[in-house]
Length: 240
Image (cartoon, rainbow, N blue to C red):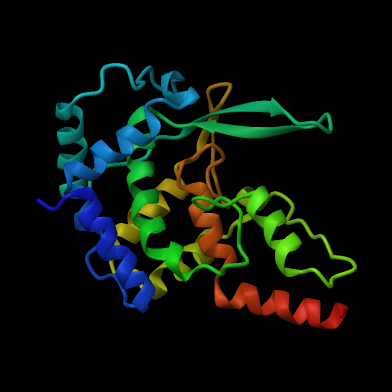
């Protein structure tokens, strides 16, 4: 069984070279990836917050990982609906936050690790949001060091970005590089698992799960697709 770092290293190299992925789903059988995922998320504030079940990081074991892998081998793993709560925003409004079960968080983190390893090398250097080692400070540093002759900038915002992603377009973008229907079905199941609010089930007809660990990388993949970039270039060309 290959180590997690070996697997992710191979995916990074394929991403850099623009090579497709044909058997990504079978990487979900590797317990080393789940151990790495556990190490990444067990200390998070929400690790002890239950979703629609009482399952949390407490009581995690290799046997639980083996059960998840067994379900994956037979394509029986299903994401549960997230428990939805509403948290306050600075403007006085609220935004929905989904709380997945612990097993779903683990699988979501493994999916995130695989997608990030492959797609991260393909993203633009101008992109700073939700990326390893990047953020507001690196964006501001680039502005200060590179855009020294710029007098003003145009600021834009994508309203309800996570909640507005079209599932069919998301899967189609992934399918351009990931030629593995089992993995694509798993991602679609993640996106369409729904939510429970006041113990009433609601369908997720669009968007990536708020609170889902894989949502940021899915959003970056969606926003960095050639079609979306092309629309932005055309729009800014018209502005300038």
